[in-house]
Length: 323
Ligand SMILES: Nc1nc2c(c(=O)[nH]1)N[C@H]1C(S)=C(S)[C@@H](COP(=O)(O)O)O[C@H]1N2
Ligand SMILES: [Mo]
Image (cartoon, rainbow, N blue to C red; front, side, top):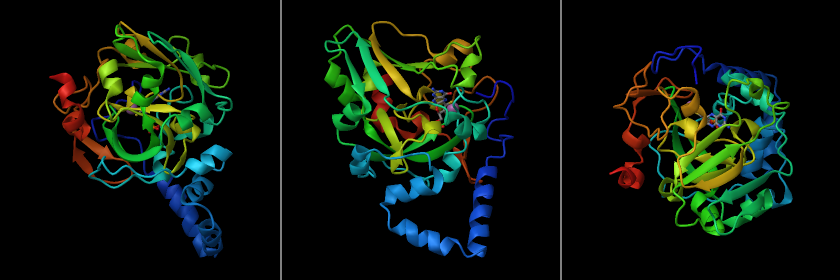
């Protein structure tokens, strides 16, 4: 959350083009050396989702169930007005403070996260509390692909093809009680795998929360995949939240527990720096961060600077929640 480096709005000092140029140089080298033609032929023999896995994320092995589900069909109801960001950039420019505060180190350190046998416990003010395995979750509702804009509070943005299902499908399964007003999300606590969690002055595990109404909105997605394959660890494997009309920090990664409450639960960044990171955190160009403007955003991997839109452009879906 850049409380050490101070970026000037969209003029971020980080050279987010480095991962791409490294990748491109390698490709160009392979091409020049005559290897890429043969590799390309081998990749066309795979399913579209798998070729990306092979190219960028060799540590992702699909389970038999996942092989039947990826890549999922795109839901075109959710439109974008920018190009999809290259996977090689999105997968190497991550905020995941459990592993590193340095965006291009996260992918490497996140490999230590043990995701096998992952469960998601849903508890609190529900009629049917339940612990779900990943197979349960993947079979809960049809998986769909959605292209969403993601706007980080640090004034950079990208467009990402998520795969997942609406959170509403999961909540309907556990039947929230009438008195439930908030949904709390809790990530994992594994300080011996996640070195960032040794920072005892931060309130680990990472938590986030939405109102029940926000959680039930059709845009609110539980993502299990990205770019047509299961989530690599740096993106929050095996399951994370995506709320595209709010700043990126609300989209909590690697969710292990969901709790329905009748109070607004404390959340990670809002507890650490309440003056800088609000609880509601809707994308809003008219409300500057205390240290930079929020009127513009830099698109990841390009020189394009866009004007930030109210609710990140999703006002038609969520404007009614806040009137
Ligand atoms: N558990 C956890 N979730 C998290 C974070 C984090 O540090 N830990 N960072 C958030 C922030 S600030 C952003 S911008 C997005 C980035 O998601 P991505 O790396 O998949 O693009 O994840 C969010 N979810
Ligand atoms: Mo962010």
